Amino acid sequence: DERFLSEADARSWFDQMKVRFPAIFTDDDDPYNGDSKQHAYGTALQGRSGSKCKVVGSSFRTSTGESPREQSSFLGQQPLMAMYRVVFDGDSDFMYLDFDLAHGRKAQYKPIGAAKSQRIKDQDAALKAQEKAMAALFSQLKESRAAVEALKQEASCSTPSSLSQRLTPAYWTECTRLQDGYCYVPILDDSTWYALQECLKTENPDWLGNGRDYAWKTQHTRLQLSHAWRIENPVLYNKYLAEQEKIRLDVRSSSISMDPVRIRHALHQACDRLPGTLDVSTNEQYLVHGTTPDFVLPIVSEGFNERLSGRPGFGFGCYLAEDSGKADQYVLPDEKFNSQKELHQKVWAETSTRHPGRGTCYIFLCRASLGIIAHTMDGQQTLDGHPVWEDGNSSVKGRGKSKSKRAARRELAYIPGSQKVRYHSEVVELTPMADSRPHSRQVVRYREFVVPHGDRIYP
Image 1 (tube, helix red, strand yellow):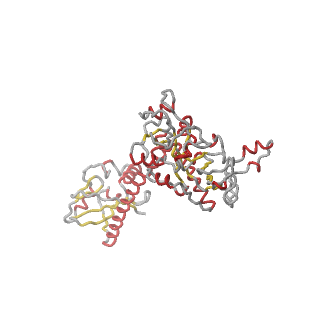
Image 2 (cartoon, one colour):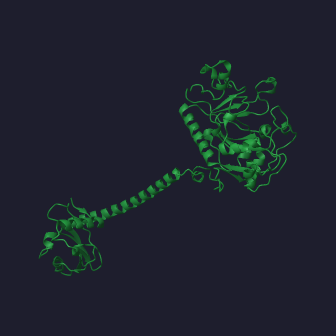
């Protein structure tokens, strides 16, 4: 049962002994009180030839200052013994010292054999190494606990700035204007600027300003980048990351292969020069979205909202494009600066940017996680003949046709062979001009990308 005692254990042991045996133990016997009083039982050791040992309190210290390690039997057993290392002219030896005898008129010691002495030395060295390792481990544990507490503290903080430090792209800035939860960061570096200008190039400039879908009838031959901002909205970005994780889980659980979508080469090549990388595990792509000035702030602050889809030609959802010519069909001009407009205050005034005036329009370049795609030409059936959208007629027994129509085409259908995973997006492919029919729901110029959940898009 013998064990080595640390200084704290020795103090505790000595305090208990003073309580139990007040007549034997006094403050002068405290091994750590620094008292240099010579005790009677130390004289027995000095009797050995060549001994250079002095007594400090109840512990032995050599003239070189080496302090012994105490070893005690289990408290409550008798007799009470202590083991001391005693150095005589540099030779180390161990012996038991009987406290009952030591505090009387005579002192006795029992030398230990060489083999046992070496074994004790080895145990002592092993214990020191173990204590050192435990101290290092305890230090690491302390650091780990401190790190966990710091993470808990940061996670409990709901301010956007804390989110921006943890779950946002590395190239984002620490925006100082996050009192609204988001900020506009002007694009100033040449590489990003030229890449965005390339994103505005369209394959068919003669189509600009022409077509039945144009909201603003005007003649123009190109789209020129005037100003650009990066939207830094930590809350929206974390929603987007959550949707990406949901797509990954769907793909793993369904064991359905996710074919990567091919984006128009010019857009893909231009976006390769933008900071950051796309997540291929969620079929993430850069796509464009044109809008009116009234919808800029809602998209920046709240994200895309599929419930506000106005004319869902191919189903309810958020519509994106791979050609800026398609996005140009849905813009309206922001003719001049008005200090009373909240959009102008946040986008132009707060970023110290001058409004360019007539002909100014807004287009978003978005990250979109398309996941498993339903490819179609009419928005009704996939290219291999399966339904694209959930059929509202199957579960609705309302009054006639109107209620079932409202339920239809709001959620994509389940993927064939899976009863729990739906398509994540819809891509309306081009119909050859020769096969197109007038007034039919087909596309002959630009492909349509429909995402039924706005959180899968980050502006």
